[in-house]
Image 1 (spheres, rainbow, N blue to C red):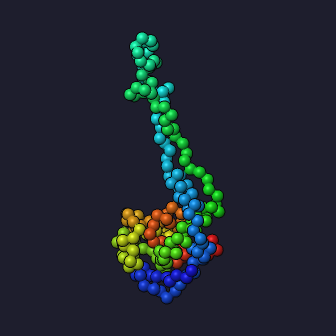
Image 2 (image 1 turned 120 degrees about the vertical axis):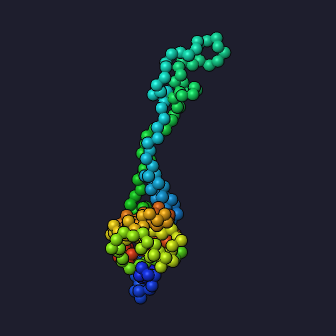
Length: 206
């Protein structure tokens, strides 16, 4: 798949880059994409939820009424889960929600997501750029030049650029990632993928 390279003014540079079919031209596998997204979201969960069971509640253990003759059920103490303020039956405990996926499965999921965007012509390649100072207005101008100011975008660079990152981090519909750390969730959670020229070339042989 050959794509034109644009500059940050939205103009065609006259150069093209070849996006490998092994990454951007595979048959999308919806199930592995689902698994990859599920794994990513599960790993974001803190898992710190906790409720107190009967033995953990700090309340009086005095028998609150006699055992027989009341016409009601027996109640040992105010820690009983049936009373307000009592313990919780089978409540949540701290746990780790993350689970493992094989590398090949994760790679197929990422390539499937990239292929979905490529098939819909939602991949844009721009020549490498940087900013002298972190200015949000500069990146907003780049998006306007590319006709993507009203779209949710993900900028993929080959290496981290501090000024570029600081320039877009306050924009609600703009995200940034490096080619090596690109994941399925980030790709599927965007409308248009903006690849820097060096990042696009890094996929060759991937």
